[in-house]
Amino acid sequence: MKKSQSLKVTLLAGAAIAASIMPTLATAELYKTKCFACHQAEGAGIPSVFPPLAKSEWVNGPAENLIRIQLRGLMGEITVKGAKYNSAMPPNAAMTDEEIASVLTYVRSNFGNKADPITAQMVKKHRNEVGKPMLAAKDLIDPAKAKEEKKDQ
Ligand code: HEC
Image (tube, rainbow, N blue to C red):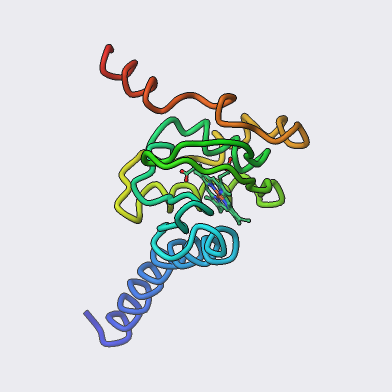
């Protein structure tokens, strides 16, 4: 290979690596600007004020719950990892479908969580809920029951 050719290959490889790292950085940035103030570093939350995202049964449960919480907000009593919270989370509907999908995927694959990614397509399906009243935990799919159903299959 000529020297100029190998330089070209190196530059292309560098660009490909940068492009593959960039989305992750952008998503971490989204978490910092949109969620961090309440859910804190590593999704730890603040006891009895802001529920944790780390190892939360909601975060690792049905994707639909997480999408709808972003689009409509959430208020009233909710139990997360055995502790009760009774507060309110405003909707994040100003984010695009892509942004919501990537921040939720980020949360579902960090902080000790392990759940399937969420796509912009999945978010789009629920877009028509924007503007509807804030949700309560009872409007969501109970993650404990969702787990049971999965076991039955
Ligand atoms: C202004 C504070 C605030 C911001 C910002 C915020 N949340 Fe929340 N979030 C809350 C509160 C408070 C609750 C519990 C609401 C209740 O008591 O009904 C909650 C609940 C949740 C839940 C369900 C319970 C749990 O802990 O698993 C998820 C999932 C969630 N938020 C994800 C996010 C994500 C992702 C972002 C950023 C895109 C975000 N939140 C931004 C305050 C916030």
